[in-house]
Amino acid sequence: MRELARRQGVSPATVVQAYRALEDARLVEARPRSGYFVAARPQRLPEPELSAPPVASLAVDVSLLGEQVMQLAADPSVISFGAACPSGELFAQERVRRAVSRAAQRHRATLCRYPLGPGNEQLRRAVARHALGLGCQLEARDIVVTNGCLDAISLCLRAVTRPGDVVALESPTYFGFLQILESLHLRALEIPTHPRTGLSLDALQLAFDTQPVKAVLAVPTLSNPLGACMPAAERRRLAQMVAERGIPLIEDVLYNDLAERDELRRAVKAWDTSGHVMICGSFSKTVAPGLRVGWVEGGRWSAEVRRLKAVHSGGQTELVDLAMADLLTQSGHESAWRQLRATIAARVDEARGVIAESFPKGTRVTDPAGGYILWVELPAGLDSVALFRACLAERICIAPGTMFSATGRFDHCIRLGVGGRWDKAQREGLRRVGAIACAMVRSVAGAPSAGADTARWRQAPAAALPAAVSS
Ligand SMILES: Cc1ncc(COP(=O)(O)O)c(C=O)c1O
Image (tube, rainbow, N blue to C red):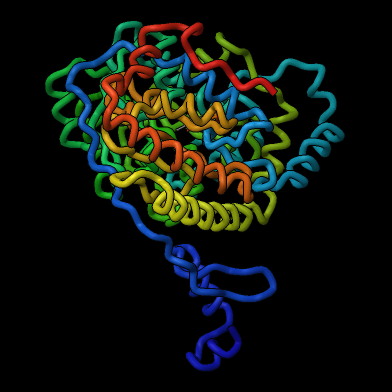
C-alpha cells in the first residue's frame, strides 16, 4: 500500500479507501496478514427473470412447511441452507455479551419495574440516529421498540388493515410475511418482482387501479428470497405512488445494513413527505438475533401502532433495550458490519460457484448486491418439496420455493441461505443438493408425477409432511 501511495502520489488512507471499494465490488479480497489479492471469479449462471404471479389476490396457507424448515434449520445435526441468518461466529458475540452484562449491572432496577410501552428512550434515540444512515430523519418519540422486525410488521398490518383486506407484496416473498397475512386473515396480492430491481411499479400501479389494495408490504433492499434492490429512482416513485393513493407502504429495512453499496441502504422512507411510509427494522441480522430488538416508525399511523403495541404486548424488556442502545452507540459497529458484508459476499460468490458446477443444466441463480440468500430456479418440472424430502434424507435442509408464494408458481425453485456455518461439510452438502437435483431431473424426464409432493403438501396437513430428521 505504501508503494502504491508513493507511485500514485496519494495518501495511504486513499489507497486503503480504494482497496475497500474494490473489495466491496468483490474484485479483490483481503487475506489476513498477507494483503489484497485478485478475487477468483466463479463460473456464472444466468439469473431468474421477472416473476409473473396471477392478477388475483389469494388467501394464504404456507405456515406448516415454513415452521418445519425453521425447526430443521436450527438443528445443529443438520447441514442447513434453510435459514436466512448469519451463524453465531459472524456476530460480535463478545461485544454483545459484555453489553448485556453491563446493562444488568448498571440497570438492575429495571428488572423489577414495568417498562414503558414504546420502549426505552435511549434506545429510541439510538435508533433515530441509526436511521440517519438510511437517509431518514425520524423523531425518537415516534419510534416504537418491538420484538424483532416481524412484530413491527405485524403491528403495522394490524394498524392499517381489517380481515379480508388485500395486501400487495413482492412475488416471491418472505414466508414470514405470508404467515402473518394468514394469521390476520388478509389476502396476498403478489406483484411481479425482478430479481435485481424488485417490485415492478408498473404492475403495482395497475394493481392500485384495479384492486382494492389496502397496504403494500415491501423489502426494497435485499428482498427475501430474491435479494432484489430497487434503484433510487424507483424508490422515489414508490413513495410518490403511495402518497398519491393514500395507501400505506410498510417498508422492511431489515437487510439495508447488509447491502454492498451506500445508495442501496437509503430507505423509501427517505422520500416520504406525507407520512404514508411505515418503516420497520431490527438488528437481528447485524447485531444479535437473540436479543429480538426491532423498531417501527408508523408515519401517519404512529399513534395507532403505539397503542396496538401497548395493547398486545405491553413494553419490551428494558434491560435488553439498554444493552442494544449501548451496542449501537459504541464506536466500531460500522466497521464490524463492513467486515460482515465482506465475509458473506465471499461466501455467496463461492456458493454460486458450487451451484454453477453441480446443479442441473438450465439452473438459474440470483446475484444479490449483499446478504446471504440465493434464489435458485431449477429446471421446470422439478418439484422443490420432493427435493426437500430427498435432501432431508441425507440430513440437509433447503427451503422449497413453495413456501415463498401463495400462487404455487415457484414449486421448482429453492432458497438457499449461505450465511450459516461455512465449512467443508457445508460445501459438500451444497454439492449434494445439486447432485440430488440432477438425479431428480433425470427421473422427472420420464415420470408422470412431477409436482406430486408439492400438490400433496398443499392438500394435506402434518401427517403427509416429511418427518423431521431425528437426531
Ligand atoms: C424480510 C424479513 N423481514 C423480517 C424478518 C424477521 O426479522 P426479525 O427476526 O427481526 O423478526 C426476516 C427474517 O428472516 C426477513 O427475512
